Amino acid sequence: MNPFDYTFPVRVHFGAGTLKNALAAELPRYGKNVLLAYGGGSIKRTGLYDALKKQLSEAGKAVFDFGGIMSNPTYAKVQEGARLAKEHNIDFILAVGGGSVIDCCKVVSVQAKADKDIWTLEYDEKGKPGAGIPFGAIVTASGTGAEMNNGAVITNEERQQKSPLWGSFADFAILDVEMMLTLPRKQVISGAFDTLSHAMETYLGSPRTPNLADEMGESVMRAVIRNLRIVVQNEKDVEARSELAWASAMAENGMLKLGKVTDFQAHMIEHQLGALTDCNHGAGLAVIHPALYRHLAPAAPAQFARLATEVFGVDATGKTEEDLALAMPEALAAFIEEIGMPTKLGELGITDDVILRQTADTCILTPGCAKKLSRDEIYEILQECK
Ligand code: NZQ
Ligand code: ZN
Image (cartoon, rainbow, N blue to C red; front, top):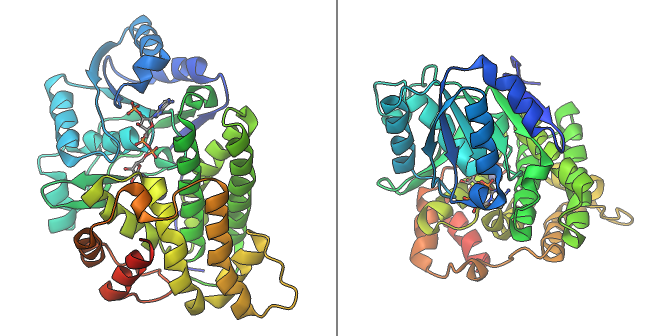
């Protein structure tokens, strides 16, 4: 195993119906001025916005709105949030939403305290941000696990890059599944698929032998597949949604990654595609994964074979390791079809070869990938996704 240090900074409050009490317990820890951050308006439609405003004002807080955080949040939006935070002397940021709102707030938190532009600091100067404004997350859409880590994925429109940025960890995260039940069915499924993708991409990194982290990852993947099958029938099943929310948190809280160099090549391709087309994250991954894995499986047959049997239930009888490895991408593709996710880029409205070439030429190449992919091979993979 590779050496590692482990601490977990996020307090988690988990459970259907726990939001009000959990927030009441947290609020006294923070100062008066609160930046209430949210997305495009779902929290107003569901009544959550009014409930939170009331609870915050009863707790004696002065609330400043930072709304309109879009899916695939932009760096310009981060800067808007940081300006607001400085202008109003914000003591605490409350991020209410899915991965997009939470990621945006991670970076707002550090940018508001930093003298330098965070993108320049992290990418051009290879620096790390200092301490930020404390923030808490109320998760209304599970899947990304963004509430459990300090990596944000931000689209820098000027640079045409959707890339990871380090920001703050949330001080606390509230995962109350009742707040997630209004999420549209399509987003429930694509969020859960994102979790499966995180666990697969972690598993398929190195070292490439089974180990404790990988066996925990297998459990997470099996739980996601089992519960996805339930929510495809009934997306309001609270038990299944709870399992998916916890699996989402488990996949991105770092536990499955301990001692490993992860892969995440599918993510890096999807992020760049997202930067250029604004496509839905989980849906983009669903299209890319099988094609990518057809290219990777021969390079890591033991891992792919084990995934096929232990997670996707492929019958090993009469099959060689190589057969099983090649069966994994097909089992994954069949599962994607079964849960009704897109299987072709055309379904996401992406047909332009120029965009595919640009994605292949500009995506990050990951060190943990089973095979050293060339830009041309990534382009070939994207062609196979058409
Ligand atoms: O914006 P509003 O109106 O709130 O609507 C949102 C949005 O349209 C809606 N929604 C959220 N909660 C809802 C709801 N609608 C009804 N009821 C609710 N309770 O759902 C839509 C999608 O929300 P979004 O936050 O964009 O989705 P998701 O959670 O999938 O986050 C995607 C972003 O996270 C990044 C992705 O790249 C993408 O930018 N990721 C972050 C990761 C991380 N930090 O660890 C890991 C992931 O791999 C991922 O890259
Ligand atoms: Zn993801």
